[in-house]
Image 1: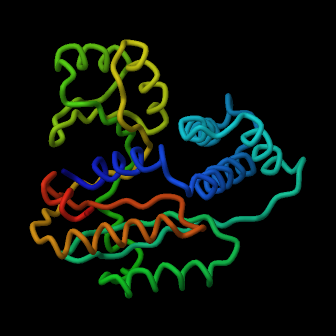
Image 2 (image 1 turned 30 degrees about the horizontal axis):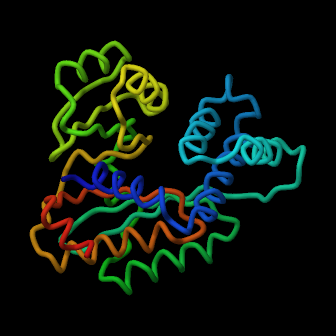
Length: 249
Protein backbone atom coordinates (compact mmCIF):
# COMPACT_ATOMS: atom_id res chain seq x y z
CA UNK A 1 0.00 0.00 0.00
CA UNK A 2 1.28 3.46 -0.86
CA UNK A 3 2.87 5.69 1.75
CA UNK A 4 0.45 8.59 1.71
CA UNK A 5 -2.49 6.40 2.70
CA UNK A 6 -1.02 3.57 4.77
CA UNK A 7 1.03 5.91 6.94
CA UNK A 8 -2.08 8.03 7.53
CA UNK A 9 -3.89 4.95 8.80
CA UNK A 10 -0.97 4.06 11.07
CA UNK A 11 -0.92 7.57 12.52
CA UNK A 12 -4.69 7.52 13.07
CA UNK A 13 -4.54 4.22 14.94
CA UNK A 14 -1.50 5.29 16.92
CA UNK A 15 -2.97 8.65 17.82
CA UNK A 16 -5.94 7.11 19.60
CA UNK A 17 -3.67 5.65 22.29
CA UNK A 18 -0.38 7.51 21.96
CA UNK A 19 1.08 9.11 25.07
CA UNK A 20 2.54 11.82 22.81
CA UNK A 21 -0.84 13.50 22.35
CA UNK A 22 0.50 16.63 24.06
CA UNK A 23 3.15 16.96 21.35
CA UNK A 24 0.49 16.50 18.66
CA UNK A 25 -1.62 19.28 20.19
CA UNK A 26 1.40 21.59 20.27
CA UNK A 27 1.96 21.02 16.55
CA UNK A 28 -1.71 21.56 15.74
CA UNK A 29 -1.70 24.78 17.77
CA UNK A 30 1.35 26.01 15.87
CA UNK A 31 -0.38 25.38 12.54
CA UNK A 32 -3.43 27.33 13.70
CA UNK A 33 -1.32 30.19 15.01
CA UNK A 34 0.66 30.55 11.79
CA UNK A 35 -2.47 30.32 9.63
CA UNK A 36 -4.25 32.98 11.70
CA UNK A 37 -1.24 35.29 11.53
CA UNK A 38 -0.97 34.92 7.75
CA UNK A 39 -4.63 35.20 6.76
CA UNK A 40 -6.55 36.60 9.71
CA UNK A 41 -8.43 35.07 12.64
CA UNK A 42 -11.73 34.30 10.91
CA UNK A 43 -11.92 30.71 9.59
CA UNK A 44 -14.81 31.71 7.30
CA UNK A 45 -12.53 33.96 5.26
CA UNK A 46 -9.23 32.16 5.88
CA UNK A 47 -9.23 28.77 4.17
CA UNK A 48 -5.87 27.72 5.62
CA UNK A 49 -7.05 28.51 9.14
CA UNK A 50 -10.32 26.68 8.59
CA UNK A 51 -8.45 23.58 7.47
CA UNK A 52 -6.08 23.82 10.45
CA UNK A 53 -9.01 24.18 12.87
CA UNK A 54 -10.84 21.20 11.38
CA UNK A 55 -7.66 19.15 11.55
CA UNK A 56 -7.25 20.09 15.21
CA UNK A 57 -10.84 19.15 15.99
CA UNK A 58 -10.35 15.82 14.22
CA UNK A 59 -7.38 15.29 16.52
CA UNK A 60 -9.64 15.98 19.53
CA UNK A 61 -8.09 19.31 20.43
CA UNK A 62 -10.38 21.35 22.67
CA UNK A 63 -12.18 24.49 21.49
CA UNK A 64 -10.47 26.54 24.21
CA UNK A 65 -7.02 25.45 23.00
CA UNK A 66 -8.00 26.24 19.41
CA UNK A 67 -9.26 29.70 20.40
CA UNK A 68 -6.04 30.46 22.29
CA UNK A 69 -3.95 29.50 19.26
CA UNK A 70 -6.05 31.75 17.01
CA UNK A 71 -5.62 34.66 19.45
CA UNK A 72 -1.86 34.16 19.49
CA UNK A 73 -1.79 34.22 15.71
CA UNK A 74 -3.99 37.31 15.59
CA UNK A 75 -1.68 39.12 17.98
CA UNK A 76 -4.21 39.43 20.79
CA UNK A 77 -2.23 36.99 22.91
CA UNK A 78 1.52 36.44 23.15
CA UNK A 79 2.86 33.93 20.64
CA UNK A 80 6.01 33.00 18.75
CA UNK A 81 7.16 33.74 15.23
CA UNK A 82 7.54 30.73 12.99
CA UNK A 83 8.95 30.19 9.52
CA UNK A 84 7.56 27.54 7.16
CA UNK A 85 10.26 25.40 5.56
CA UNK A 86 10.03 22.27 3.39
CA UNK A 87 12.91 19.80 3.35
CA UNK A 88 13.38 17.04 0.78
CA UNK A 89 15.19 13.75 1.07
CA UNK A 90 15.50 10.09 0.23
CA UNK A 91 14.96 6.96 2.30
CA UNK A 92 16.42 3.55 1.41
CA UNK A 93 15.30 2.06 -1.90
CA UNK A 94 15.06 5.45 -3.62
CA UNK A 95 11.92 6.41 -1.67
CA UNK A 96 11.23 10.16 -1.83
CA UNK A 97 10.27 12.18 1.23
CA UNK A 98 9.08 15.72 1.84
CA UNK A 99 9.10 17.27 5.31
CA UNK A 100 7.04 20.34 6.23
CA UNK A 101 8.26 22.23 9.29
CA UNK A 102 7.32 25.35 11.22
CA UNK A 103 10.31 26.64 13.14
CA UNK A 104 11.62 29.59 15.10
CA UNK A 105 15.21 28.47 14.46
CA UNK A 106 16.04 27.40 10.91
CA UNK A 107 19.54 26.20 11.80
CA UNK A 108 18.33 23.94 14.60
CA UNK A 109 15.57 22.39 12.53
CA UNK A 110 17.72 21.85 9.46
CA UNK A 111 20.43 20.17 11.54
CA UNK A 112 17.87 17.91 13.25
CA UNK A 113 16.30 16.82 9.95
CA UNK A 114 19.69 16.12 8.39
CA UNK A 115 20.74 14.05 11.42
CA UNK A 116 17.59 11.92 11.27
CA UNK A 117 18.11 11.13 7.61
CA UNK A 118 21.82 10.34 7.93
CA UNK A 119 21.59 8.24 11.10
CA UNK A 120 18.70 6.11 9.84
CA UNK A 121 19.99 5.32 6.36
CA UNK A 122 18.54 8.16 4.31
CA UNK A 123 19.93 11.35 2.81
CA UNK A 124 18.91 14.96 2.29
CA UNK A 125 18.15 16.16 -1.24
CA UNK A 126 18.42 19.51 -2.97
CA UNK A 127 15.24 21.66 -3.11
CA UNK A 128 13.05 20.49 -5.99
CA UNK A 129 14.75 17.11 -6.33
CA UNK A 130 11.65 15.22 -5.21
CA UNK A 131 9.06 17.97 -4.81
CA UNK A 132 8.14 17.97 -8.50
CA UNK A 133 6.29 14.66 -8.17
CA UNK A 134 4.04 15.69 -5.26
CA UNK A 135 0.75 17.62 -5.38
CA UNK A 136 -1.64 18.47 -2.56
CA UNK A 137 -4.82 16.40 -2.29
CA UNK A 138 -7.46 15.56 0.27
CA UNK A 139 -7.17 11.83 1.06
CA UNK A 140 -9.78 9.86 2.96
CA UNK A 141 -9.34 6.17 3.79
CA UNK A 142 -12.46 4.03 4.19
CA UNK A 143 -12.64 0.36 5.18
CA UNK A 144 -12.61 -1.93 2.17
CA UNK A 145 -15.69 -3.79 3.42
CA UNK A 146 -17.89 -0.78 2.56
CA UNK A 147 -20.04 -1.37 -0.51
CA UNK A 148 -18.45 0.25 -3.58
CA UNK A 149 -21.69 1.62 -5.02
CA UNK A 150 -22.76 3.05 -1.67
CA UNK A 151 -19.39 4.72 -1.14
CA UNK A 152 -19.16 6.03 -4.70
CA UNK A 153 -22.63 7.54 -4.58
CA UNK A 154 -22.00 9.27 -1.26
CA UNK A 155 -18.56 10.48 -2.38
CA UNK A 156 -19.80 11.87 -5.70
CA UNK A 157 -22.70 13.62 -3.99
CA UNK A 158 -20.15 15.28 -1.70
CA UNK A 159 -17.92 16.44 -4.60
CA UNK A 160 -15.15 13.87 -4.30
CA UNK A 161 -12.74 13.59 -7.23
CA UNK A 162 -12.09 9.86 -7.21
CA UNK A 163 -12.76 6.58 -5.39
CA UNK A 164 -10.29 3.73 -5.82
CA UNK A 165 -8.97 0.61 -4.13
CA UNK A 166 -5.84 1.03 -2.01
CA UNK A 167 -4.86 -2.39 -0.69
CA UNK A 168 -7.68 -3.67 1.50
CA UNK A 169 -9.20 -0.20 1.86
CA UNK A 170 -10.89 2.44 -0.27
CA UNK A 171 -9.12 5.71 -1.01
CA UNK A 172 -11.25 8.78 -1.72
CA UNK A 173 -9.56 11.85 -3.24
CA UNK A 174 -10.83 15.42 -3.17
CA UNK A 175 -9.66 19.04 -3.17
CA UNK A 176 -7.33 19.61 -0.18
CA UNK A 177 -9.54 22.26 1.42
CA UNK A 178 -12.61 20.01 1.14
CA UNK A 179 -11.33 16.93 2.95
CA UNK A 180 -12.97 17.49 6.33
CA UNK A 181 -16.29 18.51 4.81
CA UNK A 182 -16.17 15.33 2.73
CA UNK A 183 -15.36 13.28 5.82
CA UNK A 184 -18.39 14.74 7.59
CA UNK A 185 -20.60 13.98 4.57
CA UNK A 186 -19.42 10.36 4.41
CA UNK A 187 -19.94 9.86 8.12
CA UNK A 188 -23.39 11.42 7.88
CA UNK A 189 -24.15 8.79 5.23
CA UNK A 190 -23.19 6.07 7.70
CA UNK A 191 -19.74 5.38 6.24
CA UNK A 192 -16.97 5.06 8.82
CA UNK A 193 -13.75 6.90 7.97
CA UNK A 194 -10.38 5.44 9.02
CA UNK A 195 -8.39 8.60 8.36
CA UNK A 196 -8.73 11.95 6.63
CA UNK A 197 -6.07 14.50 5.84
CA UNK A 198 -4.90 17.17 3.45
CA UNK A 199 -1.62 15.73 2.23
CA UNK A 200 0.90 15.66 -0.58
CA UNK A 201 0.34 12.76 -2.97
CA UNK A 202 3.10 11.54 -5.28
CA UNK A 203 2.52 10.77 -8.93
CA UNK A 204 5.20 8.05 -8.73
CA UNK A 205 5.08 5.26 -6.14
CA UNK A 206 8.22 3.28 -5.29
CA UNK A 207 7.64 -0.39 -4.49
CA UNK A 208 9.54 -1.62 -1.44
CA UNK A 209 10.15 -5.38 -1.30
CA UNK A 210 13.00 -5.72 1.22
CA UNK A 211 12.10 -5.97 4.91
CA UNK A 212 15.27 -4.13 5.95
CA UNK A 213 14.38 -1.18 3.72
CA UNK A 214 10.78 -1.15 4.97
CA UNK A 215 11.95 -1.00 8.58
CA UNK A 216 14.35 1.86 7.85
CA UNK A 217 11.69 3.83 5.97
CA UNK A 218 9.19 3.55 8.82
CA UNK A 219 11.85 4.49 11.37
CA UNK A 220 12.71 7.61 9.39
CA UNK A 221 9.03 8.56 9.10
CA UNK A 222 8.49 8.06 12.82
CA UNK A 223 11.63 9.96 13.83
CA UNK A 224 10.80 12.90 11.58
CA UNK A 225 7.25 13.14 12.89
CA UNK A 226 8.57 12.99 16.46
CA UNK A 227 10.57 16.18 15.91
CA UNK A 228 8.85 19.16 17.56
CA UNK A 229 9.26 21.41 14.51
CA UNK A 230 8.00 18.92 11.92
CA UNK A 231 4.35 19.32 10.97
CA UNK A 232 3.92 16.72 8.23
CA UNK A 233 5.94 14.08 6.42
CA UNK A 234 5.04 12.84 2.93
CA UNK A 235 6.46 9.87 1.08
CA UNK A 236 5.92 7.73 -2.01
CA UNK A 237 6.75 4.27 -0.65
CA UNK A 238 4.56 1.34 -1.71
CA UNK A 239 4.78 -1.43 0.89
CA UNK A 240 2.52 -4.49 0.94
CA UNK A 241 0.27 -5.11 3.94
CA UNK A 242 2.28 -8.21 4.86
CA UNK A 243 5.63 -6.43 4.72
CA UNK A 244 4.19 -3.45 6.60
CA UNK A 245 3.07 -5.72 9.44
CA UNK A 246 6.49 -7.38 9.60
CA UNK A 247 8.31 -4.04 9.55
CA UNK A 248 6.18 -2.68 12.38
CA UNK A 249 6.87 -5.57 14.74
